[in-house]
Image (cartoon, rainbow, N blue to C red; front, side):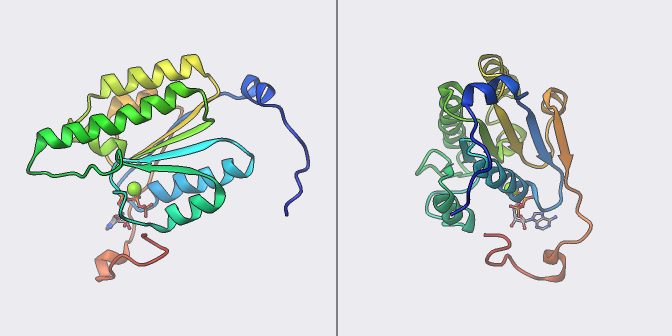
Length: 190
Ligand code: ATP
Ligand code: MG
């Protein structure tokens, strides 16, 4: 059992915390894993964390889902049971809408200190959700709860999102094992 050095009060934390809008973008590997690392750090400080994944479906049991359960971190995938079907743009729009509705519910709840919207950029790039609407919802949440940290991931983040963010990191591909024919591996990719 790890002993905590000090106890803290949520009201003090919220008063002294400047919530950040964080973006992980770029074509290199590490956007989602970096967000997971951040949640692991935050959960260790007893911050209340939740990740909503736009690209992964519920039936996939990634390593991060198993670890999150152990650490008490909440993870949701694409509105449970919805899948992307590129042949059916209307269905994709509904999936994006359903998943964003869940994000908005979490944003409005006031029950989280750190929210991660993994691959939200994907649905923005494909115009399945309007960037203006997403940014308006994020802005409103930050006004209501100025201490909330929000992380958005995905390659090709739009300029509007980058402009609105406080912290933007671009992962750049220098080498990826995929180029050498090495497929996705347990514990590294899933
Ligand atoms: P990770 O989830 O491993 O942190 P990521 O979030 O940065 O990766 P995504 O764009 O979400 O990257 O793509 C997810 C998958 O694509 C991962 O399996 C990852 O290894 C793979 N991938 C990421 N970058 C590259 C790349 N430059 N070339 C080939 N595959 C890649
Ligand atoms: Mg990712």
